[in-house]
Length: 117
Image (tube, rainbow, N blue to C red; front, side, top):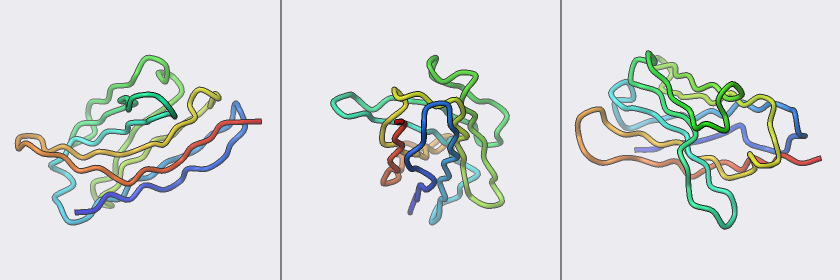
């Protein structure tokens, strides 16, 4: 099982980034996918989540209206489009896969997002 995030980097405030997380070694379409982030000295927090068929999404309050989560089950990939980025969005972003019915979850290795002028 592998989850590989990509798309992080350095961006100026107000800018945009699109994160990708490619899954392999498991039945991607059967897993709820989520994005988390962890800033230095802070706990990891849920940013956004999407159901198996993409029909339902939810967001942490501070990113509503700025971030959008989506998935392409044919490509085994989940995305996080991040717009209007703020310095407080700076963190390592992780994707997580959780099976719809079975216990257990998988995590990616994380990708750094830095928002700074």
